[in-house]
Image 1 (cartoon, one colour):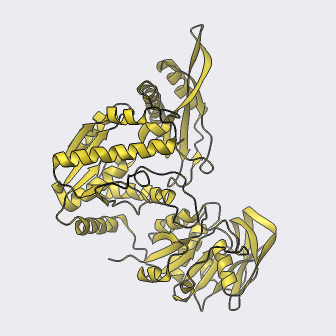
Image 2 (cartoon, helix red, strand yellow):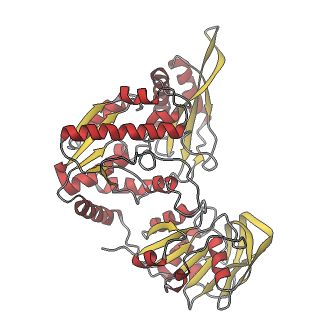
Amino acid sequence: MTHQTILVLDFGSQYTQLIARRLRELSVYSEILPFHTPVEEIRRRKPAGIILSGGPRSVLEAGSPRPDPGVWTLGVPTLGICYGMQVMTDTFGGGVERAPQREFGHALVETTDVACALFADVPSSLRVWASHGDCVSSAPPGFEVVATSANAPVAAMQDTARGQYALLFHPEVVHTDQGTEILRNFAFKVCGCRGDWTMAGFVEESVSRIRATVGDGSVVCGLSGGVDSTVAALLIHKAIGDRLTCVFVDNGLLRLNEAQQVRTRFERLGLRLDFVDATELFLTRLAGVSDPEQKRKIIGGAFIDVFEDRAKALGTFKFLAQGTLYPDVIESVSVLGPSVVIKSHHNVGGLPERMNFALVEPLRELFKDEVRAVGTTLGLDDEFVWRQPFPGPGLAVRMIGPVSKPQLDLLRAADAIVADEIRRAGWYRRVWQSFAVLLPVQSVGVMGDERTYEFTIAVRAVESRDGMTADWARLPHDLLAAISSRVVNEVRGINRVVYDISSKPPATIEWE
């Protein structure tokens, strides 16, 4: 079955990913494409609707980003959000000006008496999230003003004859009252979507797609033990059975006792598992390397080397399976609009171009919680489904500076205590991630009346819905005290514990 799709053209907004995420929560499939995607490609996808995202630029600037002009003639319902509204206004002959009073943050919007499908069953007064320095001073010919605010005479507008709608605020962010309802109205009332995007349907389609891609070939899967690679492996196994071989690489960068736990767990699932201890290879290549991007690329390259060696020893494999997710793709590929690359992921940008496998990435279009829903659909238990995300480069990106075995052992021991106390306090499922970071900072302490000069551990715990944005978790002081006490008492070499209270943005979840 072909899903009805709403395409989001990305003009570089920090909220673009949230638009797609909110639509999928409504069971409407959504994809993000660069703002300059050719109209022929858009037409080929037969979208039920198009959304133009916000962005950091001004339409008043020379060379400001614009969509393919053919987008306006597709006859597809189109919603412009913030910058997208300003592009729509400028294109159709309305007025865009520098706002006398910029709006960043909360604003109060009042709907007009003009009936608008976007605001069906929505209160007439809305507290919304605004982020713009320009305003629409006059709607284009044929458009009706359907909402205003104190600083924006045209806060929303519509041209129902052409199926064009626009908002100067961001319905996708949680700070906007009824924002999800507004997007629901666009998807269902304007675009006529059925809401047919389900995880059961995804499993069925994914299995068919894998069979068509792989044919009678065989697949080798890089199994990390996390939920992403686990779900990817089970989908592929459902599609091709024992023509899938999973290779689990102990890269020496795993958590305490993780390698043995993964071996035991996956053998119970009935997957063909090949175990490789490549600790020495990884630590040798990482020796003396401090730059986080270099670490990621070295680790990605080492993984491929191991896979190629094992593939030759185990049989003939044309395909390599990975648990790459949509946020990995979005953060790593700068062609999604004019946004910048934040960091490469070992599943995406860190792979050497010389790789001798074709990729199979069945989760590439999913967000994290969608992967968990697929896991539940496939019958995985909670231990798998709710395992917190763990970075592909492992503890190498939770250790600032060069990687060494002695310091890895310090970090493993501290991280195990963090996980143990978080679970004991009932916070493990309440936070997105919780872990320890080893800092290259030594400080003076006193233990048993003796001076110490030892390392510092930072504890990181964040709350998030999809990993694209995150806020630091307000853990109880008693829990933090328990973590700190155990770490400094049980891990010889650590005498100080600090708590990271940075959100994403401006920070990232991982330190590197």
